[in-house]
Length: 159
Image (tube, rainbow, N blue to C red; front, top):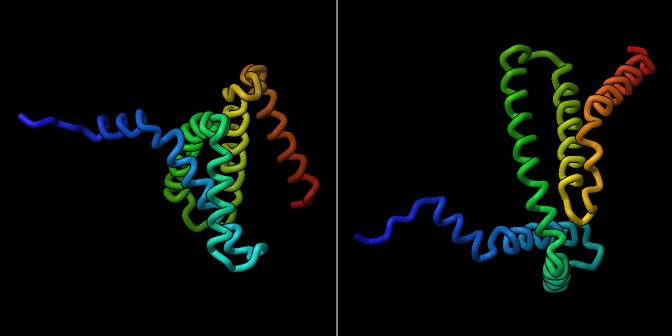
């Protein structure tokens, strides 16, 4: 019998070959830098120059594994946050599909999720030496502060 390969086997093989640690982060950095240089035209319209700069920055960014480690930390948390946001969109669509204020609710949920992903990722990221380990015990106080600031902003705005 010939070999049987599952999708998990393929993904594990790619991980062993560095596709996720180096290939995808490089492509992401290259594409963003090339896109910004192309759109802004700050260095002219020569695509060769733009590609060379994007290539150099993409390769230099992966030199000491800082970007690789950070991406490996932040993107799983971002995936969870996106799943929470999608579920909240579905539930809000069921409960209040035509209300104008729902966009503000989604913005608030997204902002809170962004902060949670950012602080959680930075606390796990070894480059900062566990910079945020004390934050894990402070989430109730942080959330209370965010709610307090939101209420204060709502009262000040006069609505």
